[in-house]
Amino acid sequence: MISYRRLWEVMKERGVSQYALIKQYHVSPGQITRLKRNESVSTHTIEMFCRILHCQVGDIMEYIEDE
Image (cartoon, rainbow, N blue to C red; front, side, top):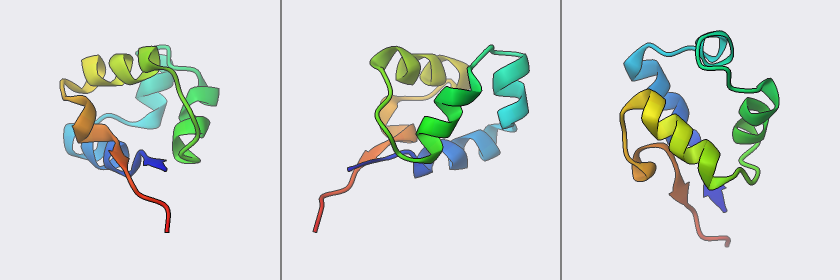
């Protein structure tokens, strides 16, 4: 499973709110919901978040092996 738990931590560190993602960066609320649920998102979406947060892919997502 891919977890986006780190994304929310990086957003908090950088002072970027979900509201700012929607209003300032034009991220769709649906994409934010998918990330909250650890659902599949496109590499374009991951790239967009890396650009917004000035970070690497591994800073915002991680693979967690199923038990």
